[in-house]
Length: 125
Image 1 (cartoon, rainbow, N blue to C red):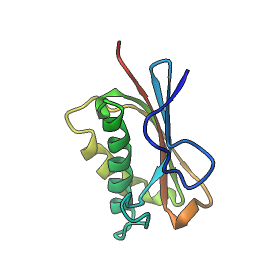
Image 2: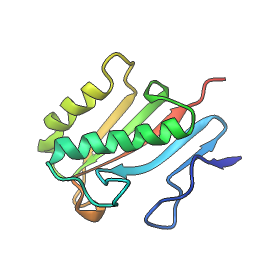
Image 3: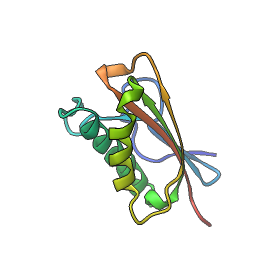
């Protein structure tokens, strides 16, 4: 059974997040301010911070927290941004067991983003 985590604010024909059998699948999130829909200024660190806050907001709406994340995939348009992204990412998970993670370089992302992340969380029974 697929249950929407929140109303669909996607910028296309997909769900932002869905729950199926206790797994929460979060579609690609980027450094877009949810209030304005605009890309945040400040480079990869600010994009990473906003991306993680967007994921955190979806988790909160689902009644979960970052400690419930099982896996995150990071897509970077420049793999040389990995150290700066990793610094912000590490701070986000400070004091919490971090999820598994994959980071890959891609040629382009929508909306001029430098970073996009997908995530999977698990609802404990």
